[in-house]
Amino acid sequence: MIESDKYICYIGRPSYQKNPLFLVEVAKDVHVLHPEVKFALLGVGYYSPELDKVKAKITEYGLKEVISLFPWFDHKDTLKHVKNSIFYLTVARYEGLPLAVIEAMSLGKAIIASDVVGNKDCVKDGYNGKLIPLKRDAFVKAICELVEDEVKRDLYGRHSRILFEQRFLITNRIQELEAIYQSVKL
Image (cartoon, rainbow, N blue to C red; front, side):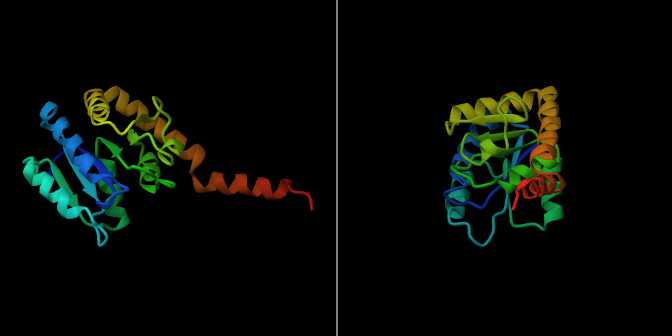
């Protein structure tokens, strides 16, 4: 379990796609401005090709108490970690359909996400979170602003849940699919 009540959660194996070294750089800068904020990186599993580099950077920067690396949890525990975080973060270089972002939305979490395909399908910039270019200073600024603004976090979180229900709730998606099938004339 994470030993802080003020942490930012990210799910993604340490690999090129998930951009964990960038996350460490951003966390380092955020820590200088907000030493009370911790980072939880979930999903450090069997395929984690950049794990040794990530651990080395965490050690080099003295961030062992700031960034926690967690293995794969069962789904219930993973959702509990996301739910207890102050908001959800992803710095991925690219995504397909980011299920972790969708799950964070289902939990009513504000999202800060890299401005890449996939994340753009889930995050409406300025509505349920922020879409940020993969620039370190831009991420640090966005994270600090959301850490400092509980009202905005709560608003983005409520909007995340609304977007989840509109776009991703399975019962709604099935109804839309059925309507498409029924509209086809054979």
